[in-house]
Amino acid sequence: MLSPLLFSLYTNEMTLNRNNVELFNYSDGMALVGFLFTGSAVHEEAYFSQVTVLQGLCQTSHLEVNVTKTKELLLQTKPSIMRNIHPVKLNGEPVEEVELFKYLGTAIDQTLTFNVNAENFLREQTSDCF
Image 1 (tube, rainbow, N blue to C red):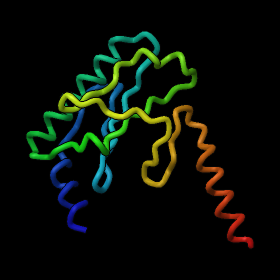
Image 2 (tube, rainbow, N blue to C red):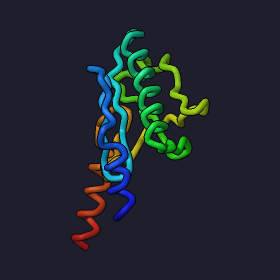
Image 3 (cartoon, one colour):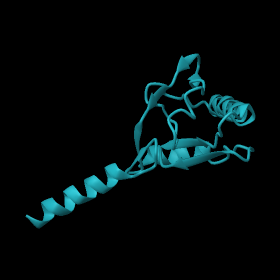
């Protein structure tokens, strides 16, 4: 119970000032969401600069980002669109890119279809019936 409270106190003032990048804090974790568009070096540069800003904010607050627990999920409707995006690096280490990530109990995949959530819901409902 104390850990989420301390995390919230430490990260409460962390904000990012870019139109295409948002920072979401919840309990003891955070999600950095960047809206990148095809062929837009400006958006990609803004995203990576905000990753650097966030890393600096964490260092200032004496928080260490656990790179092994950090994941990168590129949301895309067409696989060819995002293949040229450079991988995120934290403290010189590359962040693992994943195709599916569970955040706050919701499975999010690259195409935002939510099929995994629907399948899990159906499985739970079916098992409750029998």
